Image 1 (cartoon, rainbow, N blue to C red):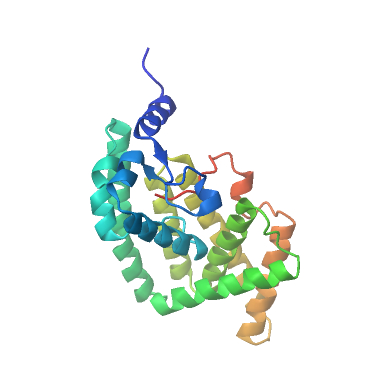
Image 2 (cartoon, rainbow, N blue to C red):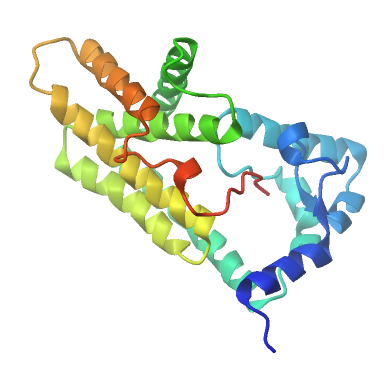
Length: 253
């Protein structure tokens, strides 16, 4: 009897023996998951370097943590997917990587350059910490932290792009394209689609305050306060990974 797709993936994963060097969960130690063969191919310093990169990216709220190029090249042979599904996954990742320069150029044309993106990201983290301190936004578990960080990051960026229908459409198109690229990978598909859902809340909040005669800074602060209350109330208009049926897979390779 032919194996189901999930069974084939599990068998491939088991055969490659993915783990951390310490043998503990990555969510506890911050170490990078790699196939056992790849770990053995690295020196202690190289494994420490790739783990440090993963910890840094995780702390910055990134969903995917790329390995340092030199180390990635060294471990690539141990991470090759032999199944048809694995080859499809590799093609998807390659396509997704190729699309990023297109997204970047489009964002710059629309006035949302790297400086604006970095500021939005930094400001979203500040808003999150503010509302966590006030005990409005829950932030105790890994799922709660993921939800709060992602919701604020996307809603705030969308809020700042809310003054133009063209910008809104471009931003939504980017996240929906990314979602559809990974339709066969539930976790990635759900989170990318969820990003587009949270963008819509950013536009809603922009529309709520755009005509009020207050400073732009104060209007944004009021909008983000509303967002914090929506998170607290588990508003259905927001995407929460913790409420999704997709596998809760936090470890990035």
